[in-house]
Structure formats: structure tokens, C-alpha cells
Image (cartoon, rainbow, N blue to C red; front, side):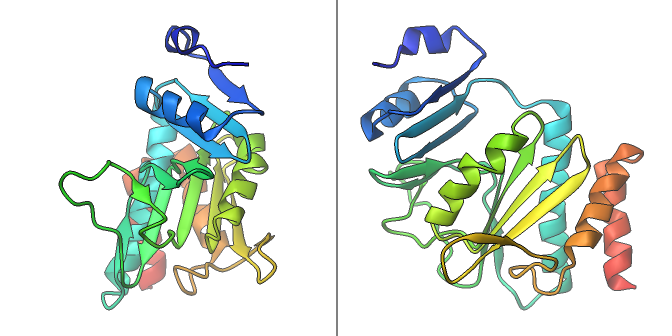
Length: 218
């Protein structure tokens, strides 16, 4: 069934289609004001809604955790590209809430290029994550399969309502398994990140980040 861009642009509802083509994806990508988008093996998912305060607060906290780890490991090179569109042309596309590169050969946008990361020219991120407010089942299913197929080493799902962090590492078989310690942010316990997230129930995200800094420095 052809996509109706007129209907989509007039609705704040989520679009999900199972028999979409890459052309369907690029049509939506280029002609609608989407907030989140993903494409994988005929599955097209588009969220036209705007980011809410809860989602933004959690997303900023996780980005702050990346910066705290980088501050404590000054010899490491990290680059955060949260919410940036990533494409493996003709096959996959995603715009994760969290995108982290570590090491050398970090993608650098050049003037005149499309405003996205092209995996046919740049290497894949080392870690991606999703902030799950209303999308937990999708982030633990379709999105998880998408990121595994792209070969991304580590995947985090932050459950806002449950104040939980699901962390997965990619195995040699190309599937995700639960991890207790981050493989990308070396030696950072997942339980400690989860404790930091839980503090958002009573504190600001900057206070929670400061608490984490004290734990790591102490």
C-alpha cells in the first residue's frame, strides 16, 4: 500500500509499515517533519510527535554520563552524535537517541554533504541507545534487531517508567546478550548507571550526574 504523506503530515500518530521499500523510507525522510525514524528489512517506523520533558531529561542525563566518563579518561577520544540520522544505504536507517563513537576515524560532516552519517563511508557507532517512554517493547524488539544487524557493539535501552537500564553487548554470533559492565565505557558498571537514572525520581538530571561523578571519583 502506497504511503500517504498528506495523511501522515496531518497526524501526530506513529506510522508503522511492514512491507515498505527504501524508496518509501526516503520519501518520508525527505518530505515530512519526523521526530524519529527507522527502516529495516521492510519495516518502516516513523514518529511525528515532539520530544517531551521526560524524554529530554533522561536523554540529557545519559549524554552527561558520556561526558563524565570522558572527563575521567582524558586519553580516550569520544564523540556524541545523539539523535543523528544514520543510514546503511538501501537497507537500514535509524536515528538513535544516543550515539557514541570511541577512538579514531570518528565521522566528520563536510560542507555540501547530506546531514546524516553514511555507513557506506563511515564506520558504525560503538554504542547506541534509546530512551523508552512509550516505545519500550519496540526498542527491545525491532530496534534491537536493527542495531544488531548493523553490528553496533553496545546497545542501551532506558525504561523511563521503570527507571531501568537494559544494556546489551554484541556477541561473535551477531546477537545481543545482557551485560553487567559497559564494554565501550570500560569498567563502568551498568548497575551504577541505573542507580543514577533512579535519582531522576527525586532530583534534577544535573544533580544525578553530579552524584555519579562523585561515585566514580571516590
